[in-house]
Length: 184
Image (cartoon, rainbow, N blue to C red):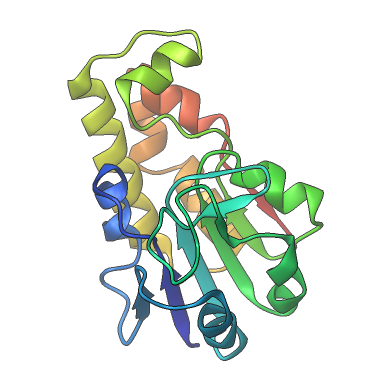
């Protein structure tokens, strides 16, 4: 299987690197390409891992890609047809909405994902920086341990893994854990 990690370079999402950094021969794209070049990479890979900031409409380019601004999308409905027959891992705020709205299958995804204290407050709960950091680190490490599995196997492993255990005591992990999902 050929792996592609698309992770627009941004200091606030550096914690997501353990998801894909230990995959042998993974192609990692953090920016510096046009959307067309990214599309060509998607076409030749089997498992597309997408991490960063986003919305229900897609994954933000964060001004890292040629001709695209901060709030422009590097992944949006324009590329959905390319996901057919591929395995997809989507970790950004509201990725689950994007996946469901576009009927994407064979996918592991996050819903709204709290990764900063301000986001916790916006979602109606308080969290310390220590709790946020612990949740971010544990999530990425746990997902990275299972990333080579199928979406259902990844989801099941996460339901029974270190992040599930942390969700019992950490409010950030609890919030994020409830919003993980997968599609067949």
